[in-house]
Image 1 (spheres, helix red, strand yellow):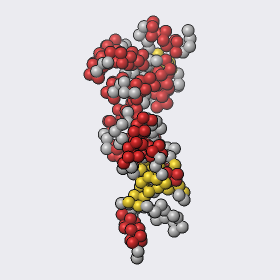
Image 2 (cartoon, helix red, strand yellow; image 1 turned 45 degrees about the vertical axis):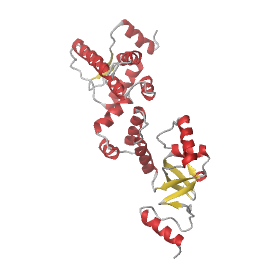
Image 3 (cartoon, one colour; image 1 turned 30 degrees about the vertical axis):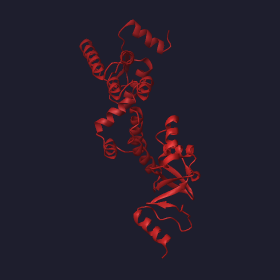
Image 4 (tube, one colour; image 1 turned 120 degrees about the vertical axis):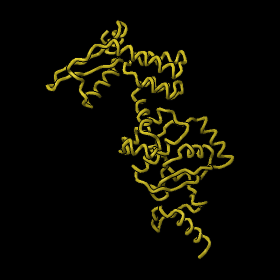
Length: 297
């Protein structure tokens, strides 16, 4: 047996979990420590990539490093056809290699269907240190919804407590303006969590603006929010005997109406379907804001 055959046998022993390829398939030949060198022209980006925004300046910095030192960390790909691959993780490195003029990259090849590939890409993405809280929240949501896993399973996969995952999920209920401030690092995760706990959207927006303008600390914001909650609780009237429905569809409608009018809305109904929509406001100014949102003035 010649030296090339011995090398191939050793690699197969190391990568025993990889599906055996058809005998007529010509795999890229250059291998280093079980890593295959694949031409860039044979690699396609992943349409399911969790991250779709890449900082151009950071890509250029990485490209400069790759020109000097080469790509140190291999990308992970899967085969989708003869001499055609798709990225599971490492699109940023792939893009930087193209910018650097590199012709081929080191890569691990994994066997995965579309759902498995999405899950691997999402889990790999969530481990990045440079994600902002909104990107993390969106990734958690995609893992739960698109990969059809429970919060408990997600907790095991990413090594986070379920309460942490729930806290991130709440951020996605924040208005776009607040989410954008979190993305741009104007607000921290701590600030966003406090604001997400405020049901009154007008009060939420007011506190958001105050936080930005006065550079409030998380602790001070928490105190203001708690004072607001206590004041609201002490001034509220007793609830009527007609309870708010816990039907998920009703709750969804309440959330949509609340977003539309800028304050908390409630739907109360009886078993016959009769009921009312309650929109509370605290002043004439607040009422005018609601009417303005509804295009009634």
